[in-house]
Image (cartoon, rainbow, N blue to C red; front, side, top):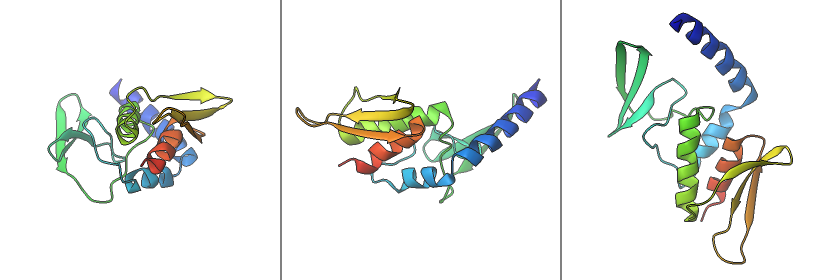
Length: 138
């Protein structure tokens, strides 16, 4: 079962990464509001567990830990990483109810930082819309 899951993951990740350039991940880490949060996954399958420690579970009984390596990029196809990205965008804009949703075939992150102000950030994926919002954050 583990072998089948691993093969499926390798095949789907390679297809997804062909469709989503690493430039989006680079844009995210270049933002002033970016930082690694617990639960985020790097592109080398290490997940941040806190205090500068990263872990990768190879199988049920094997855990490998590592320290942060500069230049690592987040896996923006990972749902936990996108949830953390959403938290960073909310924090940067000071808006706890900010959400990203599909609108007219695109993803949109809407921000209303003050009464009478409205900003909409669009992307072909949820991650792209959130990165655009983080880039524009004050």
